[in-house]
Image 1 (tube, helix red, strand yellow):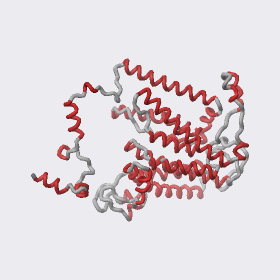
Image 2 (cartoon, helix red, strand yellow; image 1 turned 135 degrees about the horizontal axis):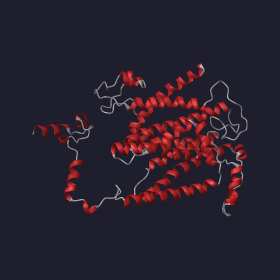
Image 3 (cartoon, one colour; image 1 turned 45 degrees about the horizontal axis):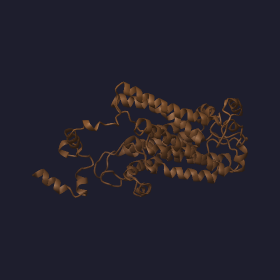
Image 4 (cartoon, one colour; image 1 turned 90 degrees about the vertical axis):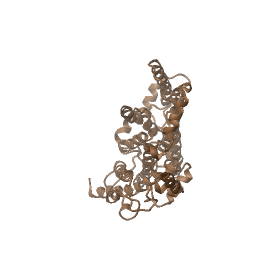
Length: 427
């Protein structure tokens, strides 16, 4: 590794640390507001605000990562500062440096355009059009990918803690990606369509007669060269539809079969954002890779906490990051699936039917073994005594240590409840 590359990676790490400080503020403030407009407006306040006393911290605390270790408590209220801030800052810094190393070739020169299709490059697509030089094109694409990484970091931090994904994490990046793809035209990771001509010729004779006209070899290179910006916009738009549609279909199937929500709508929007940046083929690869990462976590969560529900957003984010960082090794394997061309539609329908059948089989086995769905409650078995016990256990009461932590003397004073509280305690 050259000295110049090391210096660039250090600069990317420092830049990522400062960006991570902003992302940590987003992760704290977005959940307090429902609408996208309110979430964006919440960022107008200074970033370094203590969550308890609303004091703007300064000095050493403004330094990313190191600031937390040098000053772990608020100088005003002496509250211990959350460890989430330095963790997000460090994770963002590492991702910025790693993504630069993965997507920008080392050395001072960039290989010249060689006319290859945009799925044959070792670090991503080769440049087919000549709107920008390869060096400019790679860095423009990197900027959009870094924006997506920022959205994934914030979505993961919030979803892990609260199991929600606010629109502020996803919608702005999605809108920028669609607009930038149409204006620049060279931000795509893979082209709108590609297929292996030999595979298509082999599959055509075995297909039904009404599907055979679809199995024709088609090279999109001429279309990309003639309409580069239209092609870039279509890649982003279809990626958005494919990302959102894949999760939405599984969400609907889970609701119809399991009678409960399998995935939240925040996951739908998150995948739409990923698809708007990467395109429909990579986002489907993410959709297939994410369950493999989630299975192990789900088993551990069940064994440790007897909880069969886990937030799915972090695994979608992790699968996206893994795909980008290991593109030269992961994509050649995934590409074989998409080389089948029109046969993909047949496989998608088959996989959906297989998913429905598998879920029905699981439900049948659970009923035979005597397991009942956690979402189904027998109303006849819920007595008035059960209702009173539940109400008393859920009612906030400081004397039984059930009062929320944020209901401290400072919060009571701000709400005008401190004097009444002291009077009741004295009586």
